[in-house]
Length: 222
Image (cartoon, rainbow, N blue to C red; front, side, top):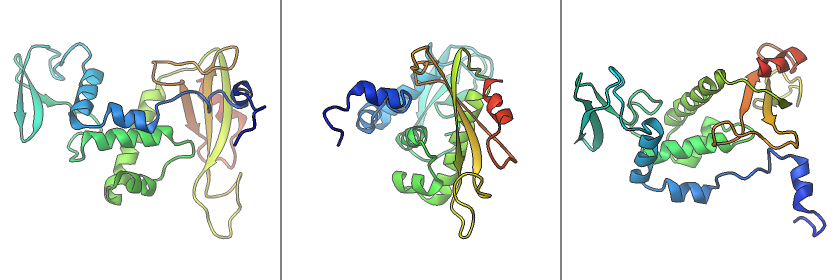
């Protein structure tokens, strides 16, 4: 436990990014605890101004249920779409609540969350957890691909990977991949929030390198 002389300002001075306020697990479960809450959140996120046809971009539609799933049918071209259509959750039988919890766990993990850990946390099989994790990671990568950091940018590197018997430990290990992480901050070191969901983070893997080099660090600013 921290002593009485260990003030909040001292904690924040250690790392403002690590100690920033976030969404707690109890708050997540309260906000997205049932199927209706999850569907409402996804609908607002996908169509803040109402359903838009993915084929012709029309907004007039009818709504119906089939096998427990809600569908929107465009009145112009008759295209049918659901909340999951065109997303990483398309054709998945997992509840939306499970997907949202998986997103939360991956987003909150500092040291990367393995598919095995995800399997245990979500109570699903490994053949379900593995593609789920990689679909979500790919979506996160694509979302960040076109973002550029500016102003004051703080950089750090990390080495991720499993352990190998008899191999070198830590930095330079042949079975660990180097990553470079960057965060845009204000002048006083506070992380900049790009879209209200958290600090703007950009990460790039230093592929084929034994260690994170200055060249790989510069990729975060490109």
